Image (cartoon, rainbow over all chains, first blue to last red):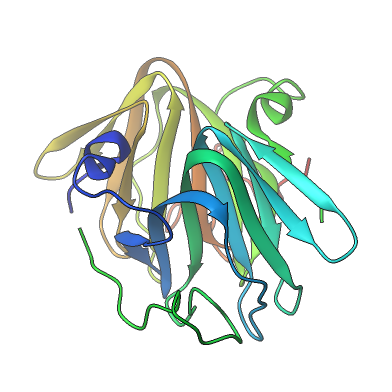
Length: 119
Length: 119
C-alpha cells in the first residue's frame, strides 16, 4: 500500500491517448492519460466512465451537445452514451472506470489498446 | 449528465467529517469531504477506499506506520486494513468507494453517518 503522486506518475510517460494504470480498487481502475486532438466516437455497453481534468481542459463531444471540462472538474459519461473527447491543447486527465473498460468501447481501430501498462 | 466543479461543490457546505455525494458510477460513489483533527480507527470488511487530496494534507495512520498524503496524491486503503485519517490543518479530500461504504466502517459511534446528502 503506497501513496500515488500524480505529477510523479505523469513524469514517467509521454504521448497521448495511452492511459496508464495507477490504482485499482473494487474492480475499478484509476488511470492517467494525456489527451490531444480528437479521439474516436464510441460508447461502452456496460461501463460508466469518469473523466477528471487535472491540467488544461478538453471538450467532451456528445451527439446532442459539447461539454467543456476544465481543471478541477469531472464528467461521468453513463454506459451507452456515445462520446468523443477532443482536446485543442494537450491536457492531463484522471479516469475512473471498471477494469473491463476498453478505451475505444464498441469500436476497434488503430487507437484501440488491448493491454494497458501499470506504472 | 452535468459536469461537476469541485470548488463550486465545496462552496455549498462546511464542517468536517461529513462527506457529500457528488457523483455515482458503476455502484461506486464520488464524495467530497473536509478533514480536521483525528477521525476514528476503523476498517471496512468489503470495500477498498481511495483518498485523493485536493487541498492541504493529512496523515493516514495505519497500525504499523503513518502515510502523509499531500495535495495531488492519493492512497488506496484495501478492505480489512485498519486506518485513521488525522489532519493537523483542515484539508479537502475526494473519496471513491462503493455505495455500500459506511464512513466509520466496523465502528458505530457519534461520528457514524447512516445517510449522506447528495449535492
